[in-house]
Length: 339
Image 1 (cartoon, rainbow, N blue to C red):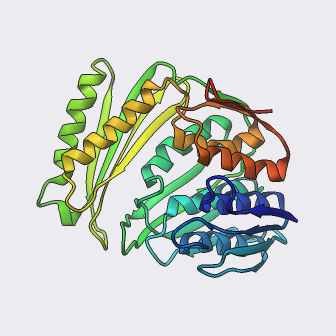
Image 2 (image 1 turned 90 degrees about the horizontal axis):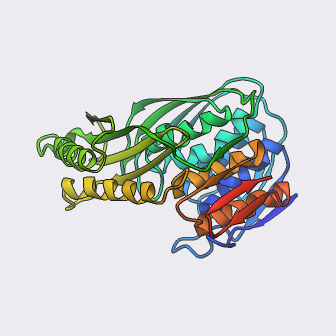
């Protein structure tokens, strides 16, 4: 059994997600204790529990400590059998963070797996759904990973209710890749999503105009492709996702609307985040790096990011608990290499 101290390093839910993903992929038992020990409310949240229960169903696992607030879990996977499940997080818990838990074990199967997930598509402290679709999965395709996501309904905090259908294709051809340089810009894209509650105030149109002006002024000779939509949701909400498609990789940024926060300020926030990542001259942004290392552990290769975050270091620490010392980190160059 692999034993993980959940209070190590960054000490958040990512430790649980990565540990469960690897346990279900390698079919080895894992125990995680001190889960989210240093958070204001320690223990499993609904999103973590949903990931645990999804993998329990997919691998017929035996689990201990599977309840909201639990600070210690044990997970014993048995056999990879089911290939269709429905996961209802039950809150506005992040769908994209749940995807971090189940993507690796499901693409390492020998057949397609269908998962319907109900929860929050665009919520705080997690990538927006479009960031996961276009930035994270866009980069993962370069190493041979193919995951299809269909958006049925968007879900914002606090009621959630978003729905996505996901098909995980087997990772048959693993490609080694180096995400070191973005390369020449092919185009810059952006999605603006706003609930119909905000249509009268023209939130999406206002954000579109600001982003169009900022991006065209900063990148005058680059194709800019931004779109917006108003959607039916249970709770009012708004998200912006921006990404730069380079010759070699994709970098991105996102921002969420908030009560009493001007639409123009949300647009400027997303733009400034993207510009900061672009100016870092790295292959991937700091949030994508967190996600990529789990897959680089199997495909090998390297990445250069804008910042070696404590979150990234912690994720690497968890991975190496399962796979041994396989990463080299160059702090000065901000390069992580899987060997």
